[in-house]
Structures are given as C-alpha cells and as structure tokens.
Image 1: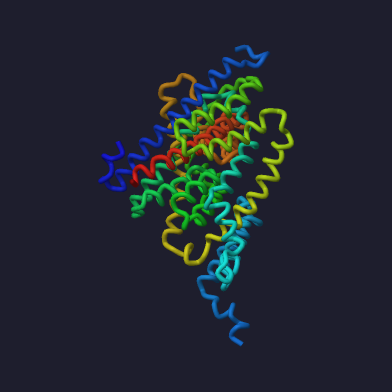
Image 2 (image 1 turned 90 degrees about the vertical axis):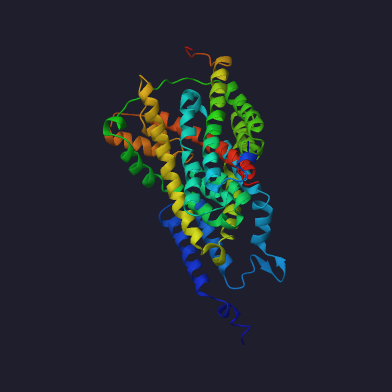
Length: 50
Length: 374
C-alpha cells in the first residue's frame, strides 16, 4: 500500500496520513469502547442496576 | 584585557532577542500562570543557552550540563516517557467508564493534528516529518508532542514544545470563539442525562493492562507512550501501591518536569529559534487547536442528525487532551447559556477520552510517517 505512494507528492501523502490516521484513531478507540463495555459486563459493581 | 571582556565581545543582537524571549516565557509563567511548570524552566534555559560562550552546552570540548541532560533525557526519549508514568498515575478513567460513548469524541478532536499536517504542507513545508511534528501540537498533550518532535524534528523541539504548552494554557481563550462560531444558542443549551454508575475496582485494574496489550499490537511503536501511561494508571488503581502512586504523581513528575523544561530550553539557541519556521510553528499550533475544537463540535453535530437524544455539541470540543481545562471551559460556556445546565461530567468523560486519543494519534503518526517518507 505504501509503495504505491512512494512517488506521490507530499500533499498526497499528508492527505493519506489524515485519512488513515483518523481511521486508525477511531478504530483503536472503538476497540477501547468495546473493551470498556465488556469489562463492565464481566465485572459489575454490586449495587448497580445493570 | 580582551579576555576579561570576552563575554561582551561575543554578545550579539540575536542573543539579546533570545534573552527577551526567555524573559517573556518567564513572565507568562509567573504573571499569567501559563503552564508555569514548563514555561519557566524553558524560559530560564533559553537565557542560559544564549549566554556568550555558554558552557552549559559545551566546555573545552566536553559536553556541558544541559547537553548531558539532553543526550540522556531527550535523545533517549526518557524524560517524556517518565512524565507519562506520572500522568498515568494522575488520570482517573472512571468518567469514561460511566460514559463510554464519549470515547469517540476523543477520536474526533484529533482531527486538528492531521488537518494541521496538511496545512503545513500547503504552506510550503515539504517535509512530512516536520509537518507531523508541528501537527502533533494539536494533541494538546505536551509529552506526546515532545516525544514525536524528538523523533522527527529535534532541531525544532524548542518552539514546538513552547507552542504546545502555550496553547494548552490558552484553551479558555482559543476554544470558546470557535465553539460559538459553529453552534447556535439552542445547541449550546442542550441538556444531557447523567447516570451515576459505580465502577468496580477490577475494571479499573484490568483496563490499563488490556489497553497496553491492544495498543501494543495495533501500533507497536506507541508502547513507550501508552505502556508507561497505563503503568502509572495501574499503580494508581491497584490499591496496594499508594506510596508509589503518590511518588509518581508528585516526586517523579516534578523532578522530570524540572529537567525536561530546562533541557528543552537548551534547544532554544538563537540560531535554531530565530527562523521563519518558528513563526510558522507558532501559527500552525494555534490552527491545530482551532481544528481540534471544530472537529469535535462538527462530529457531534453530525451524530445529532441521527440521534433522538441530542448531545450538546460543546462536549465534542472537550475531546482534546488538555485536562481538565477543556471540560471546565465547556461547563462554563454551558452555565453562561443556562445556569441550570450541567454537562461537566460528560465533558470530563470526553476530555479523558482525549487523553487516550492523543497518545494513540501520536503512536499512529510515529508508525505511518516513516513508512510514507520511505
């Protein structure tokens, strides 16, 4: 994937970085979201109504 | 006779300008309370390093004290990484566990980092590594900015750090006009429900361990950042290391902050600082904070199109890492519109998510940029 960008302009690379970077941040934080949800289900605090 | 006045003989206009810049940083730290823990040591370091024939960098061919500190703490990335242990010990993730959906605002508000990288390229910086080091100012997270800049643009570490910490302290001035420009009064008055959910100790202990594993697998280069942040958090949450937790929050953080600040000041030599690029860094840093705020607000507004229970768009702006300043700014704005509207807890949740989002963004940039540059 990155070899295709080897001859591209710096602007193209920066736009690619924006696209993939933001997608990456969202992907990792979605995983964290799922992790939090799973942990809260697995280890509920006594006294919570969930 | 000349030897006695050797200092005067080697004093130039550039050094005097740098003394003034150092003085301004010290003034901002003391009088304006702008991140004094970093700006004061940086300001004093700026004066030290610009003294004629200053021996703090080199003396008779041997490295001086600040050069030794730089090589030991910045070149090796030790100082910013140690700061993360202290930051981790200070972070309470509970607000995020109570409002997990706020985590997405911590991602959206990283838009400023990537938009600023592109902006820098458009403004003529044809070096993706330098542009990325400037863009990371938008992480609103000093140690992450230092970590990335020390890898990609060490010669601009000084101005990048000064810009990062200055704009973090200017969040109360930067964010409100951007938020107001992008939202209506009605939107700013949106109320949000808050559920007080208790979180078990097990969740708080397991969370940092799993986050480290996931981040390490997704972006291995982010391990020093995320790993040590989560190590600090584990010390805090485990419940059996209170002394270490307090030491990480206080002694460790304070000692490393002193060394980090004055060492970064040592990079502020006249030749390195007095360049057009420095001005660009300062302006682009401001743009990064504006884009961050806009990214968070616009993301919430897009979500609201599809949601029945609307979210106050101002909460999206709290998705930056500047904690707790950003969430306080949002609550202040909400109270101004409606004194009975309390969205502080939601804003704090987004703010904590921003702390995670910024280091993940930093890790992704560290992974991707070398691949793109080739």
